[in-house]
Length: 306
Ligand SMILES: [Zn+2]
Image (cartoon, rainbow, N blue to C red; front, side, top):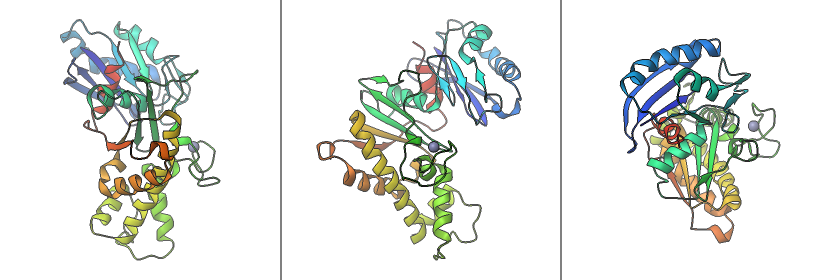
């Protein structure tokens, strides 16, 4: 049995996971409710105490968190964590607090490990996990192992340049994939297209979000379909480029956008194949995540524990 903890900007959820990948006990706290890390850790400890007392012989703790560095065990300058904007020694603090060996990695890597142990990528040694949420993250698995790079920070697919001199990105650069294919990216596309005075069911529905665009697409709204086509084009092209680096057998898409089914998968598939180098064509599957959205990161974090 292992404990998996998923730290997000808004919520922290934890789960007790057995060898089969079943979550036996679950809980959480509000990440945002705490100004500083000691208060946060204290609340997490109180939330976990009854469970830790009930289950002895835990093998360890795995944590998925934004900007978590597997090499240093620290969260490093996480813009979305109120108490994580500096360097937070997360693994060391958890080991002291709970007396259990603790492993950490960033949330997208944790999702990749979850998918490899229990989901769509089970038994697949070479794949790319792409998380499409508020931001765009990724985990690259090569030869059965997660790629960390020399400093533990490999796999930032969200910040490859998808469009030269394109949209301003939060990282300070221009045209990053994230500015087109994240939850906010797709809304930016919608706003740009609406400015061209096109007819659409989306007019007057501000503030827009991915789900509203999905609903409009279900009603055959041409603008919504155009938004998905454009988004799928950018993502398909970028994924085709990524394939040339690690030659994956599969690409797993996870997150809100991936739930839009054929509206997003059809254009991704089309532009992906069009842009692939011939030697890779017809060989790489693009599939949605097979794990329940709320559990992926917990399962992946738990699987970090060796
Ligand atoms: Zn960027």
